[in-house]
Image (cartoon, rainbow, N blue to C red):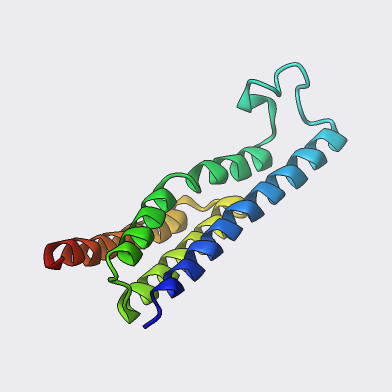
Length: 139
């Protein structure tokens, strides 16, 4: 198995993060055009922006929470030469949960569904952590 394949889901997660930044710019521009922003407070206060902007902004913050663990685990598996078919499946599954989470968070923002997807993603990370711990143990 080519260990570098673990970087494809990493790249996909990075692209997802950049896509959310693009969404944020679009939402902010729309809010500015519609006049739904408090111009004096917008630079320092999130509450100056309408809810749709805050949803996307909050999702960007989410892209720097558990995904950081994902990046570390992918690089750890690669460095330990522990990239397997299971590791790749888990990595792609994690990215899929982040994509669904982003879709829910920036759309309906239905918290029970968002929470379920988040929990699945964390479970996938835990499984990746176990693979990494096993690789360290066997090294």
